Image (cartoon, rainbow, N blue to C red):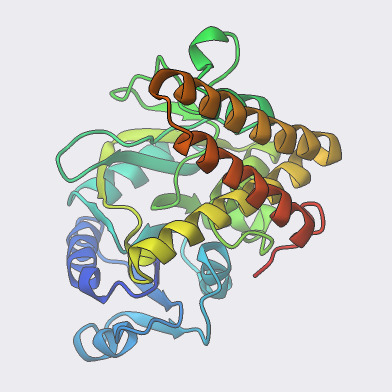
Length: 315
């Protein structure tokens, strides 16, 4: 066996059959594989459905929702194949994606992590090969000022060629192929992160160890996005996602940019909210956007305190 696939599931029973069917078709092209599903304390009967309809899948049941990285950490130490694919339940691959991905990694021995071409259901592209966030490029993105600072590397490069395999900084975790030897070298996901920054952090550690991260367009994956969050209701999920995103940024910038980087990020968050809100106020005579932005900045300040200035997660 070359490959173990780890799927973290949280209230996505309605997606499991399609996801596993696509995975098994892709596994058949490489002579089979091992599949492990980590259930993050789902309330929709996901674990029972897997036991009844997918007995070939190894199931790990957690007692609470611990997030993406920590859930993968429950399975990664048990992997004994040379490659590991981290796959979302809302990610559906073409039958040749795994075979082509493994062939590519065999041909590129310094490639430690490989990502796919991510698409929406309608075939439109999703960000698939990204650059590391910094307080400055995140500010430019939020404030809508990227076009005025062409010398600053964008999180999503403007000149990105989706048809060309290429090295990048990080790839999204919905299809995340990594060598087991790389995991053994750099370690598991940092449990500091509950969601949204764990794969960025791991890619950074992978590159710091001398490995490369590549984008591979021949592996095509339809990614829905946000399916787990929807199970908590749209309004609750929206607020939760926003808070988790803010918290992850604080933790990430403190870890990789220190106190100065964290302080810069917090100041830039407030400045971006003010700039965008003022611009909308002038254009449309509405304070809604300004109010939304300032609410986000207040939430940032609150989470700054709750995370003990970006050093401790809230969950």
